[in-house]
Length: 153
Image (cartoon, rainbow, N blue to C red; front, side, top):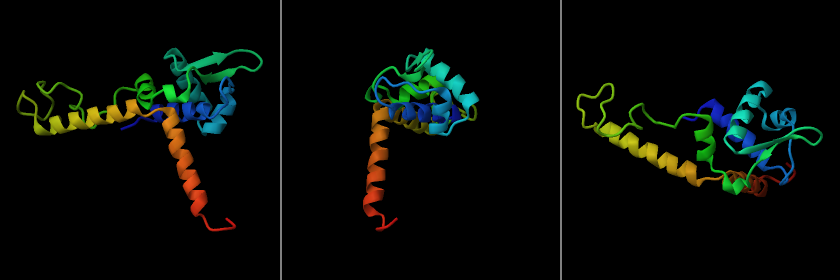
């Protein structure tokens, strides 16, 4: 399950990705734009900056901006920088030969094997999906909605 911390980090990065390249945004403006609590956002932005995803500028025209184009930053990278791995069950990230609570065998159970596959598939999707991919999907949804909405709305 995606933690609130990772979800907030993704929302902040998506808001930054919508800015013009090279344009920084102040924390207060970013918090408002991404609809995030400022205090919590400050800690997340610091973590993302230390992870190499953001650049911070001080002084006039200061604020935060993405360190790379949105197409070069994956959802998986953001999640890994702000959270522990997404696991569908506690034993999913363990090697199949390790014993987990509730299992009677040390060779791994069928549930562990399936959950391990789910874990791997989810990580592949997250690593292949960039911030730009999400922005493109959101744009498609908005365009589809505007094309199908009744006239005058």
